Amino acid sequence: MSRLTQAEIYLGNPNLKRANVPINFTEEQIQEYLKCKADPVYFAKNYIKIVSLDEGLVPFALYDFQEEMVNTFHANRFNIAKLPRQTGKSTTVVAYLMHYAIFNDNVNIGILANKAPTARELLGRLQLAYENLPTWLQQGIIAWNKGSMELENGSKILASSTSASAVRGMSFNIIFLDEFAFIPNHIAEQFFASVYPTISSGKSTKVIIISTPNGMNMFYKLWHDAELGRNEYTTTEVHWSQVPGRDEKWKEQTIANTSERQFTQEFECEFLGSVDTLISAAKLRSLSYDEPLHTSGGLKIYERPQEKHEYLMTVDVSRGVNNDYSAFILYDITTVPYKIVGIYRNNEVKPMVFPNIINQISVQYNQAYILCEVNDIGDQVASILNYDFEYPNLLMSSMRGRAGQVIGQGFSGSKVQLGVKMSKTVKKVGALNLKTMIEADKVLFNDYEIISELTTFISKSNSFEADDGCNDDLAMCLVIYAWLVQQDYFKELTDQDVRKRLYEDNKNQIEQDMAPFGFMLDGLEDDYIIDDEGQRWTKTDRDDIESTYGDMSYMWEYKS
Image (cartoon, rainbow, N blue to C red; front, side, top):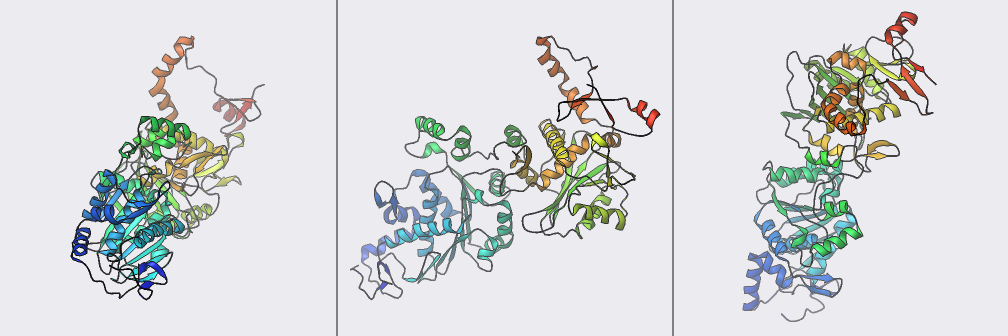
């Protein structure tokens, strides 16, 4: 075709054809057009141009794995791809999206990323490639800006952040979710709840999810479920060695310039969690999740209540706004190992409504014991359970000097509360015991949300909390539980002493480790603690105390 006249170009851009400009195809152009329409790989290899850092504007020379990616996207409706960094994954998808827009009429395409500027940058790559198409391959332009474009065949492309609010009310024929693993879980959940149904309801609509792993989040869940055949996604995986020029020498240099862990996650594409997690990375990698028996409004049930079984629930209460979740975990404490049989996690439930849910579930599970965290509005929830519902098995705590908070029932006095306050001591003791229990398989669970939170539950400022942008509501329920397990009242309830069991399980190994040094454990060691000032406190005989002073549990005597 001859060069476009001034009247035929779009808004003064000589590389773009405006709408309603007739084209007189040559026979050769017709044949090429049909080839391009039938084969997106042929289209990309022959007509897509990209910007190279070294050479500027060059034809898109697809690697073998990139050709396979395009063919997979073209043949399947639901696609998820796990690829290393710097493999041209986003450019490959953009090339396919341009093919889809040109050769399909009246389709809506969404380019979504964790941040709107990133999505607009991807759209910019598409627009650059579009400008460099031959004019006989172009659809005329109706609208063209940084956030969207519209072609005369009715096809529209929108670039936006991956959020429900950004695309609410819109329908798409194809959605591209770029670096989906880096989108916070709560945003990903909101997006899928509000937008995804419009995609899945169509017969020809497509979803392309592509990312480098970033911990065990929704991208991990979708990928894992796809591998197990639990969803409709077709998986695409690329190893770093498939990229030309990458060999063992390149690997060594990359590790030297970054770190072994960073290379493992970003190039080996392993689903690692955050650094300095409470639970060891090896244990986290071994955890797996299953589908619950029942789900409803944030509630997930893994086991039905059984007669003569004892159950316990730990509760963490939020204000029910934004990214803050109210949560509880329900445990079967009948035998060791303990089992998590149900969880609840919801960021919309109000504190006044939450006690109703707690009460209903706890009653069904044989009047389960309940321990609430009462630092903030948790006290309100516990009070409703106690006074309004008159729940019989609500655990209380009493302050007992150096022993701190002591759990029981039926306490009286001014230093009594309907639950436990999350102090530094409670959190530290609970977290460390939780680590021991999980790594020793003394508490079993198969819930995705719990696993996800544990992969981002990290050491921070001499404490443990969620990594930036993550949640720890379920993790804190576990911390409360692990602290409770060490309480004498819990041991009386269950007739189980976890520390003793852990010791017995590892007794032989301990003795083998110590024997070469001439040490033998005879069971006669002193029971003592060292306080923050370095003073030694030895536990006295409880019977002696009670005979002299009455019931003053958990008293400690100082020995210089």
